[in-house]
Structure formats: C-alpha cells, structure tokens
Length: 236
Image 1 (cartoon, rainbow, N blue to C red):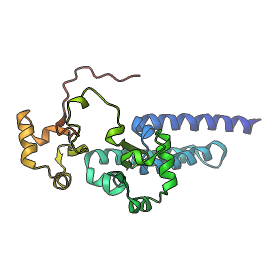
Image 2: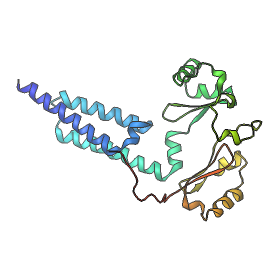
Image 3: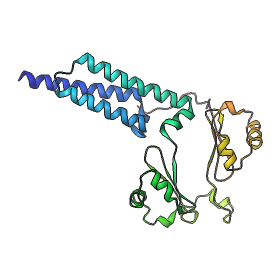
Image 4: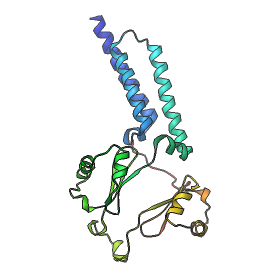
C-alpha cells in the first residue's frame, strides 16, 4: 500500500510541475508549437512520466533536469523575439505550396509532404477542390494557411470599392521589430523611399515601428511599439 501511495504522490507532483512549467513558458507554447517547443514538451513529458513510477529517480535530479530544459526553452523564446535571423536559422520559414493556383511540387518534396496530405489539410479547411486555391502556405508549426481565388472569396463592403479587374496582390511584410526587410522589398519591387515617405507622413521612423505590411489593397498597415492602450485587456 505504501508503494501505491508513493506513486500517487509522485504522479500528482509531476502533473503539478508540468502545469507550472506550461504556465511559465506562456500561451504561445500551447497555441503554436514550433520545433524547439515540441522537443522541450516531449522531453519534459518523458521525464515527468518516469518520475511518476520510477522510484530510482531522485526528486532533486528531476528538478535540476526540468529546470535546465525549461530555462533553455525560455531563453530560446526570448532570443527568437530579439534576433529574427536566429529564429529563421533555427526554425526555418514558411513554405509556399500553392502559388497563383499552381502546385509547387518541389516545395512539397522538401517538406516530405504528399499531395494526399495537402488535400487532407485543405479539406479540414472546407476546401474540397484544390482548383479553388490561389495561395497556400505551410507555416513553421505545420499548419496550412490558405487564400481562395478572388472570385471565390466572400464579398465585403471594402471589396465594392476596388477595381474588379485588378490582379490579386498579397500582403508584403516590410518591417518587423524595427528592421527593414530588404529582401521582401526587392522581390516585390517596393522602394525604400516610398516606405520612408509613408512613415514620415505619420511622423515615424522605421525604428519606431514594430510591424509594417503593404496590404492587398496597396495601403500600408503600421503597428507601432507603443500602441497608446492605457488599460490592455487580458482575459483571465
């Protein structure tokens, strides 16, 4: 009976520890798990499970191991926020699978993805005809982002003001964390002078901007570091 009680206590303790670690690492870990977060979750889960029924594992050894992996994941998350190139180097970048309605077979092979698995993910988004897709992007967390062809997209009041014969445009990221994305600007023929003039009209410099995107309507969307929100809301 004593052994059963010990296993019960150790199991509850392991569960509580994992709950505290998940809380510490934040909501991002739960919503969009990337490579290092996936590895961390697997290792932490395995250690906690072993601790629950393996009495040879000492409590202090478990705490040290969990602390190391938790701290490593936490530090990596902070580095990813600070250094975008480091994030791209370690995690990679999203991959275009369908562009202009055409399937990019080479990108499918690079991601070890078959046409069947692509169709499966499209069906999960209620798209049963691949011909309806204009643009599909495989995110770094393995999820698929899809844009339907223009004639199949729902009409909004904003659409009524656009030229129906204009070619579709995709949002172009220009600034992330105060840094100009020169490659994006060059590939999409967005001049730096145009961007700077748009920012000057707002009384801002690139270093003042957290995120800037040229939208599908050609307008510039800007998010500043300081959003002037006095009491931000966070649902408890």
